[in-house]
Amino acid sequence: MDGIKDQVEGKVKELKGQLTGDEGMELEGNVQQMKGKVTQKAGRAKRKMQGKAEELKGRARQKTA
Image 1 (cartoon, rainbow, N blue to C red):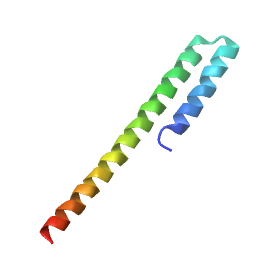
Image 2 (cartoon, helix red, strand yellow):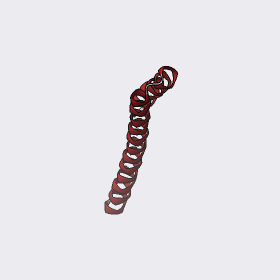
Image 3 (tube, one colour):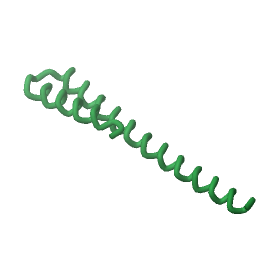
Image 4 (cartoon, rainbow, N blue to C red):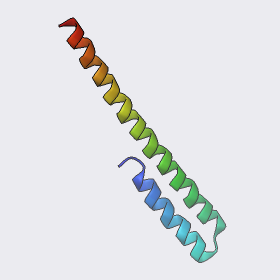
């Protein structure tokens, strides 16, 4: 769920900005959406690296056993 909240809130701000003609609000929404996407991708990468680390630990244990 990393970053999803920022993506949703950003989309709401973007649409609110479009409806009201507030370019600043629209831009703020776009930035918040990007932040959410980056956070989400970083979370995925972190989990993937943790999985790889656990895999390597398991291999090392097998070799020493």
